Length: 446
Ligand code: ASP
Image (tube, rainbow, N blue to C red; front, top):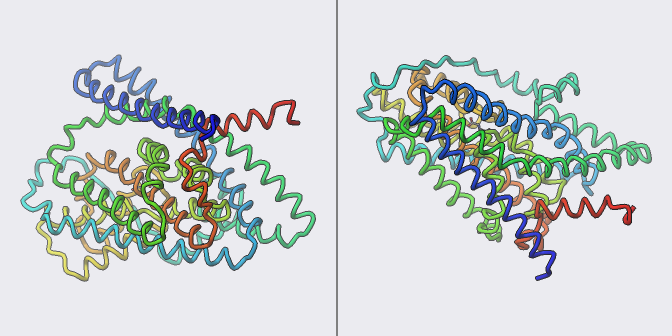
């Protein structure tokens, strides 16, 4: 192994380890504040509501700042770089099929595990139902389809409407291909800007340890581990189903595709830490994209399309929570669900995930849509709100894993997974990339 490689992997390990260390420090700090200083105004106002809140939010904003320009440039670059337009349709079709397949497996795990364990039976409703929850109206299927088409590209970008942005990129990409020399000029400008954005991702990632510390410290200072206690059965069932899906389903699919799942999991570590601390698949898009393209070896034409699409329509972890929550609330209220009801739950949660973006807490809104369909009391969601933030963090990590796994699997099937890079443990070191950038910019190289 070359000296450069050893140096690169050491630096990469340093950033991931640093994020992890700061995360644990945030967890301890938050838990201590929650237990020892819940009423100390200074700590609550200036530390939790001040420093942690402001710095954590700024970190999330900085990630979000990258999402739209990165998806726009990267996806257009990907489409223009596609050798064959039919490949785009095939890539989309395979990704969609995998998204649906894994979501159905995920929710079935959730339902199966919670029905077998009988969670929620004999639950004391009076004890925890102090909060309330009001449902939002589900958009009609027709509206979901109409909303795919942007009426104002800048408006879609300003609102961060991912599906509309993807649609706009598809059209612009195709038009660029048809525009000959002019199209090439514009495409090369977009590609250069994409390079700049990727480097901006690295700059933001280097701030991650501090952002993660503040986010985690604030969450645990406000939530407190003790909230889990009355909901332990529900909480642990969701966690068990998440783990089962994370390890079982994804490893199984990787084995079938002839890929070593351990390499995938290892290279996804820092992305998972981002997903966990931001609880947002959307905000994690830049990091997922970076991991898929520069560490796992997925071609830009596949990753730039599947990752933003998946962040919006593919939510395996959320589907698991919905399965478990349905059984839990039905049992807690003593309502019997039929096999048809369970099928409706599966269908609804797949549909609900298509129309909702991957942002914190959206899983509960989707759950309300599912409950309305099967006639479960929507106010029952109030029972699980208390532990939802923690579960949101965990399920977002599984959601993001689903997007990245689908990217690798589709890329492999299309011959667009660089196997050398996939197997190379040192591929895509963040700091090494920064070193390359510095080299690129050094006067000697100009
Ligand atoms: N926070 C999740 C995500 O961004 C969605 C959810 O389950 O609430 O993927």
